[in-house]
Every structure is written in structure tokens, then in C-alpha cells.
Image (cartoon, rainbow, N blue to C red; front, side):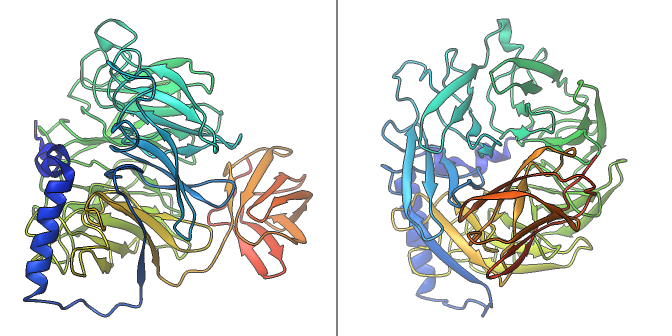
Length: 492
């Protein structure tokens, strides 16, 4: 089995400040020789640099927007106890640490430790997530946390003999249309190769599948629920051709189908999750394969895979995170290494932010470590999120003023929009609309059908699916203009 993540991540396993300082020095020395950075219309802004006390190494967890318009995320390390944090940050860059893990003490950190995965926002306004370590049994947890920072441990893994219920949940959860959460564990299960599980908001866990190698092993990424109600995901290892991983489909009842096994020629090690685009197909990335530096791929629900991009290091390399489809229809993502400034930070990091069309045309938006000492970050191993103000937000695992990661915003000129939670519902179902500058809204409609609504705040509207509504966009008329949802709202 390959161990690329551990190989690339030696930076985060040695003292991070020392490693990042070494990389920053390499950047400075190289900038003394070369200072060219392509002129781009895009604007990247460093919002905050982590300093250890407020978190350290936000490496794999994308951000999520809350009801209040702020962004919420996790750091793998740092905080009051050195075992990771949950934080809130405004779009202007004011950061608040909401929770420091291992607050309940050693030896196992019963409240969890090292939250690798992103948070997911539920309709009750709370966030749900996973911690890869800690818990009652030392093998990770599922937790709930309020926007104010009150954390509740819902489940501790390895509660069953030989960890048949799973261990090491690196991946985030997904909130399904039935109100339950679904996720994966990297290890444990009946065969020790990881699991897919369902968990209720009350903490009742059901193991749906235990991987056995032939159908993949080590799912590092979370799941996505498709419009057909089934879930789709990736495993980092094994499958039909050795150690390169798979793409799979699984029903809510636990029936798993392997859609594709990577064989290195078409990619290898899909660490990131999938996104279903508006055309119905799924898109993802592989860390390696093809021409060594990783790929972007498209796969149909039936399992037909097309490689859209093979990175060549100059345009980025080794994408660890998945993609997000933005309001312009393109897919946006990051690479952990490579880019125009790769000579400044040899081999280990730098990285890029990029856009790629569903047809495969790639544009490099930004190459990290563009300035002396890399205040703009090194190694963006997390995915991007498009907030309702139109801008993208992300993190890097290293770089910044203290060398241990940043939060950044990236503007590419896209306008504001609204998003709904959930993205589907029957007639009469409650729907929350998130956006900006919603005060004074005069109209809400579902595919042209007017709905009654209440403006809760400048960033939140509550409504219900009106009688006669059909699948289509949700529109909100505000004093500043009409805002349209980023995806179609599906009415069964």
C-alpha cells in the first residue's frame, strides 16, 4: 500500500514551526533570484495566520458558511491543548476559537483530538463533525458543536471488539435528505480497511459497509449524496489493480458497488471526495497517477471515467482535496504542490488554486508562496468553498506569518447568490435560505412560485416549499437586486 500522504506530510509530523520556517527560508532565498508572478485578475487575501494558540495546520478541512454568514472550520493541531480546534472567522478576517480539543484531559482525550474533516451545517444551526483521534476508546469521535462553541460527543469509535464499528474518521460527514448523517472511517471495520456508516443526530451509529481491499480500502474523503438518493465516494487504496483506490456508490441501505478502480495510468490515490455537477456527472481528483502529478477526472453514475487534466507541476501538482462547482458552472480546486513558484519551495509545497470547466479547460488562478516569507501560505491541501458573497475561501497547512497555516479569500469576480438548506424538499417542508444583505427582502420564489417567508437576519431567511412549486432555482428579491440559488432546489 502506498503511503504518499505520510511521505508528503512529514512537514506536519515534525515540529511544524521548524519545518515551515525552513520552507519560508527557501522561499526567501529563491525570491532573491526570481520574483516573477503572473499578472492575474484574481485577488487573494490572507485573512488570518495561525499562531498555535488559535490553531495550527488547517490542512484537510474545507470551511463551511453558517447561518450568521461567518465561516467555520477546524485545525488539525494547536489550540489550548495542542490537539486541534474548531474556529469561526468573519469574511473580514476576525477569528474566534470556539473549542480546543482534548479539553477533558488525557490519556485518550475523551472529547476527541485532531479533527481532520470539515464541519457540516444542519438545519438546526448546529455543526457536526469528526475527530480522527481521541474519544472514549482513543480511535476518534463524531461530535456536535453549536455556533457558540458548546461541544457534545455523539459517538466514540472502536466501541465494538476489534473496532468493527470503524476507527480514524478522517472524513467529514454529509447530511442526507432523511435527516441522518453519513460518513467513512479510514480504518477499522470487519476487515480493518475502513467503513461507511450512518449516524443519527442523537448518536446512534450503523455500519453500512466494511471494505475488504477488493472493493477498496482506506476511505479518506467523505461522501456526496446524489440526486438519485445514493451516496458516492472514493477509497484511497486497493481495488482491482493494486494500491490506487476506487470510486464507489452505496445505497442508504448499505449496498456497495465499485464503479471504477484506478490503475495509475488514469490516476492513483483519490484522497478528495466527489462533487456532483449540474450535468449529473461526478468530478474529483487523484493525488498521483497519469503523468505522476495527479489528475482531475469526470465519472458518470454508471462508472465511465474520463481524465480531464493531468497536472505537469508547472500548473500544479498533487491535489489532495476535492472540487466545488461555482455559480459560473466551472469547478474550482487546489493543488498541494507545484505551480509557478515551485522553485521557491523545492518539491515539498507551494501549490495552486485553479478552475476547470466540465469539459477540461484548466486555468491556474493563483500560485502560492508568491512573496517573501510566504505570507500567502504554502500547501493548500483543503478544498475551496464559495460563500454567498461570491468569493472563495480556503486554508493552507503551512506558511503565513508563523509558518503554520492561514485562512485566505480568493475573488474571481463572481457575484453574490443564495443557497438553500436543504437543497430538496417536499411541499410544505421548511427551508433555510442563506445569503448576504437579505434585510428588506420583498419576494421569495421556488422556480417562479411565490412562497411566504420570514427574514430572520441579514444573512438568513426561513420559508417553506409552496404549493405548486417545481424543481428549479430559488430567487430572493432584495433592495440590492435579485439573488438566485447556486443549485436547483429539487421538489420530489
